[in-house]
Image (cartoon, rainbow, N blue to C red):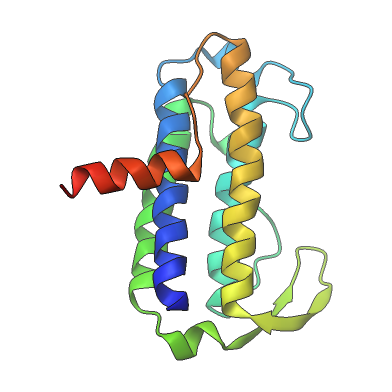
Length: 169
């Protein structure tokens, strides 16, 4: 049951991220890197942070504790961000495909990029955290894109569910 929920939430997250990335297609380097009044400072900063979170959490769940996040400067264009996101998406889907209900209960200890270890939590809780984290930063990216006349449209879970239902009939 929990595995079905995890799959659903990650399908939703992928769908919402794709909408944001499509809205950003062809954006100029100036607009991508323009200062924005959000925690990551720009559209590029926001997207790379969200991508980096997807990557680093998956690494942690596999027992690898990277010492640093992805480097924003290594992604000069929206195309470079989207290409790396496609790679991460495939890796995350493979990770999820290999999970079982039992694996979701496995306690995972995380060491952050500053070397601080946190008490273990069940994998499923960390996975839901990552979807929630992505929702926050997609919303920030959507606000930046909307201010540039490039709204990705509604990103609500219910819209995704309705689209899924319609495609199955």
